[in-house]
Each structure stands twice: as C-alpha cells, then as structure tokens.
Image (tube, rainbow, N blue to C red):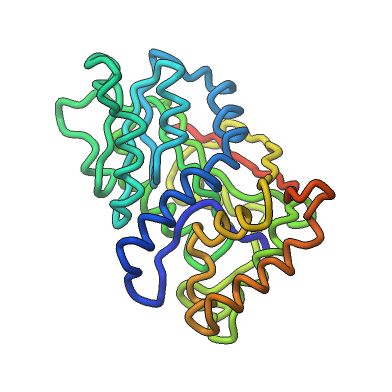
Length: 285
C-alpha cells in the first residue's frame, strides 16, 4: 500500500489534550511538512507562479506551501478546518507583524470550507492546489472530490488545479514504515480503512470533478531526518498512528516505528527514505 504521510488525519481515539495537539503541530511544521518542498517548488516553477497568481490552497495546514508561493509574489489564500493549532502556525508564517501591510494583504488564512474563502467581490482564483497526497485511506479521493466541488466555482475559466498522490510503492521507501499503522481493528475497506493506491486515482478525481487533464509529473521527495527520534516525532505528527496507539500503547508504537526505520538509518545516525510523488494538473472548463 502507498500511505499518505504528509498531513494530520482525524483521530479515532477522541480529542488529545491541547498541549499534545500543539506539540504535534510544531513537530509537523518543523519536521515533517518540509518533506514536500520539492513538490511545491516543482509545481510552482512549471506553472510560473508569480505576482499575477491568485492561489487557493486546500487543506493548507501550517501553510508552508502557501509561504513558498507568497515568496514568489503570489496572492495566497489557505483554507482548512478542524485544525486550529495548524492554522495558528500558518498565520504566524504568513502574517508576521514584521511584514509590510501590503505584503500581509496578499495572504489570507480561512478556518472553514472553500466556500468561506471568497465572496461576490473577490476576484476568481487562478490556481487551486491540493498538496495533500491521496492514495492511503478509503474515501480520501471522495473527500478530495468534495473539496474540489466547493473550490472550483471560485476559480477563473482555465485556472489550473493541482492534485497530488504518492508514486509507485516500490519507489516509496516510507510505505513499508506505515505498516506499523495497521491494527487488527483497522477495517480494510471501511471508513478510515487502508487501501492500496491505484494508478489512476488522480485522473478519476479529475474526471468526477468535471475538470480537464492538462499535464502531470513526478518529483523525488526523500524523507530525511537528523536522527531516529526526529523521524518518530515527524511520523507521529501525521496522525496516522493514532488508532494503533489506541489499540496498543504509545511505547509499543514508538518501538515498532524505530524497528521499521532501522533499514533506513545511515552510519552517521541520520534516517533517509527515498520517495516519489506524482502531481496532476487539470484546468477549469
């Protein structure tokens, strides 16, 4: 299977204490989120993102992809829901007091759905991005389709829409580590259950959304960590191990993760896992 490691998912174990959620959000933004920077930059370079770009980022999390686009001059709006601790970090990144008022005006963070990101007076977006890769859990493609259905009416005719997914499992070392996340209570095809990635996942989402495919690409995004401790913290920040922790315990999951990471530990103590991600560009009719 090809799991999605790069975003927090809802926990089935009930709400975590606030301190734990804040710590996990920091681990996400400081350790794990940066692993997709090559993907962000490759997409932005191909689409020539710059001052003329009005970008809507779906499930923006703590906003690193938005910050990269803003640094190229784009006006960015990030949308997310149910993860206030991540959005707080996104606001710190995009709206610091040290920035000029003109720069701050080019960045917005919206706690809600895509429909909350614009009104009748807001110019249409020229680019919509969904940098959360699909191809892990049952229903992830359908959830992305629902987001696109809400977002594409806000986009201009011919606007680009970017979807992302994992590459072939044999080229994604991290997929073997995510086997730790499987538990006996994890239904193979139920809500939140694991499923193998399919080759045409992205194309199917685009077809159902009524968009027109306009290109694709693959980008190497290795997961590199300073040491096993950082690797474990980064992986746990995704939220994918919450159900396993509930079914066993935190210490057992930590131990299993360290064992799964052992083949990727180098002589200097760092952890290095090669991965390939795929993106698909579509156009709004």
